[in-house]
Image (cartoon, rainbow, N blue to C red; front, side, top):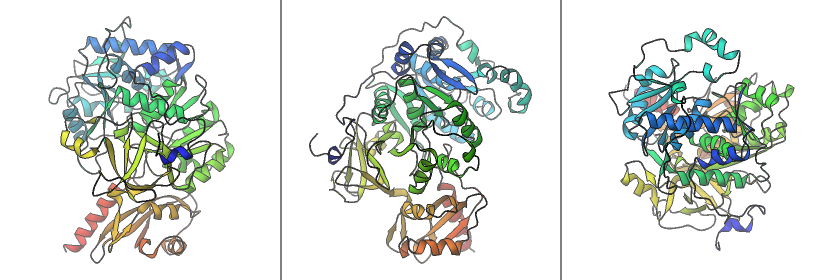
Amino acid sequence: MTGHAWLTKYPPAIRWDAEIPCRPLTDLLTESAKRFPTNPCLDFLGRRYTYAEVALLVEKAAKGFQRIGVKKGTRVGLFLPNSPHSVIAYCGALRAGAIVVNYSPLYAEPQLRHQVDDSGTEIMVTLDVALLYPKVVAMVGNTALKRLVVGTLPEVLPFPKNLLYPIVKRSEIWRGPRDPNDVAFADLIDNDGKPDPVAIDPKSDVAVLQYTGGTTGVPKGAMLTHANLFANAHQAMLWLEGVQWGQEKMLGALPFFHVFAMTVVMNLGLYIGAEIILHPRFVLDDVLKDIHKKRPTLVPGVPTMFAAINGSPKVKDLDLKSIKFCISGGAPLPVEVKARFEALTGCKLVEGYGLTECAPVASCNPLYGVNKPGSIGQPLPGTTIVITDRDDPHKILGTGERGEICISGPQVMPGYWKRPQETAAQIVDGRLRTGDIGTIDEEGYVFLIDRIKDLILVGGFNVYPRNIEEAIYQHASVAECTVVGIPDERLGQSVKAFVRCKDNAHLDAAELMDYLRTRIGKHELPREIEFRAQLPKTMVGKLSKKELVEEEVAKFRARTTV
């Protein structure tokens, strides 16, 4: 333990050297079902399932999967929004020995096809809705995909919503041709719930293939073992000081196909015996209504979600005081967004940090300790973070030196699916190279300067978008912003800011530029500021730079080739 700077100021109630269990991921649910059988486990739009009910449905799903050919190592895809189907199929596939492959419901056909073929997904679980079914049924038989398991929303809705849905949402249900080999979800779970036992080696057996976003190339499947995912749920539990087993309520508004929600909402929620309040997607008014009415205590989210709550005019009429802890992940949390949200709700909002490749959480700010502005916190228990030379990953830098953030710990993946060369480049000396620039101070707090891929080179100067975004967010009229580098014939790149104002707020580029002159360096000032009604977001709700960069590059090429 000697030599770790964070040990001098680690939260007193948390042991960094705590034992991290190495167990099958399915133990998360089975242990909670034994301890809290009658406690509510899932709340889906008013229909509630107890832990005993969910555990039995998972056993039935496991046997159903085995009946249709799932063996140890079979890849089972989930092409689903948040619903009881997603939790039951996830846990049931793992119980049957399968490897789960998560798919975003927003994938277009080329993305689906690549991931199906790359992973070798043989069975896909989906719903009979028009946005999902036709995209995936087209791949049965001409890709690795052999069969679909198809659920319906009425079978998981409460009365009378289950009767009204086929009428009110008729246009959303797929009415076209169906594959004759489809298995109805209801038939999958129509059995005695006694699957064949499957021996799991938590350390070596892969539980989930979680595909990276692909913003820097072709998406790759991170192999997350049972041990990786169980460890990260346990680490997150240790970090949530004062969590009450069997008594918490977890808001499930983030999509479970994303690694952050999979671990910090679903896996952690099941582990601590929480009631998970499921939302098929984040709709601000619906989320606010449920916080007011159903009283969740834990609310994981992404910065745009907290910013949206901050900006809602309805907040003043709602009671949000049930929330104890909020963890923000997936993207840097602007200091101003954190401050406004905490003032609004009275809860603690802390920023965590991680990557798909580490299941995903590696560090977090303490709930009851110092939260240093701009810091992504200290390493979770059992996790080591060092800063290495960007050009020599074997060389570890000292306190305060700027370099690449590298992570080691029980949550770090063994590698990428069928990509040994990429694995060797990403994991060096047992440490995961993050591709992010940062520093560590004398108390072990990690500061994320920026993503290496987002770095803007302005006439030879390194410009970090996060510094500029933090300054823009301090303006009272700003709801959201993102900063990118755009092509510049003279400087190579220049800075452009995209801004969305709060409702009924008025701000122009000249006013914002004057505001920024005293807050950031001259070389950091945007050359252009563009205001938009909406900014592009990723499938999990993070602000996305990719589309904006592509737009600017296309405009530059059109301008320079005329």
